[in-house]
Length: 260
Image (cartoon, rainbow, N blue to C red; front, side, top):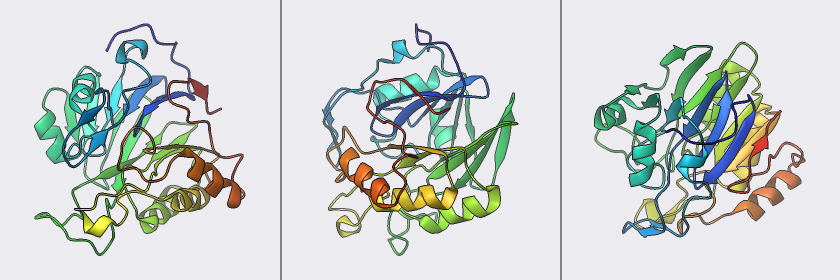
């Protein structure tokens, strides 16, 4: 994707809406879980707002990280096009095969290095731990999170998960995080697991931030979709209650900020 976005500067970021955030790390511009469709009713899921930033305003995207491609609220139609125009797409092996092009697959526990950036795939659980599993043994579907490392910085992206045990495992393996992007919103669909959460609640996001000892946290996956039952106000209250208000980075869609 070529455009007139701001120059790449490590720590710079913008929330597009839903789960989608663009950020600069290791001299590269990355996008996670691209969603750029206009308001759309997909059946089980309904998008209520379009993106706060057009793809053309983001500049060149070096890497697209996709936690999973099974659900439109993590990769919609236009988001798929945006991802495929990035230099490299990284997702699960199954998703990478479906994406084609420059897509590369990772399973939890695998990693790859691109320039100064090493990308580790980590486990995520997209629903209740005791929820029904698919034919490959995953709750809901296969989802991965990511740990990104440069010589100076490491960053965690949770993907859609409800498992604080997995967050704790990341903290134990990698140590404190400089930055984290957490998918909250307490996503709920009546047809899935009797409406039990499919992503972190606001309180869980605050707990995850504490477990990770993160210096700055961007919470996403809480706007623009009807099945997100908690929004930014819930997140702010939870972080303030946990004594982590200063850790929470602004997440107003469309406004560029800096994590540093």
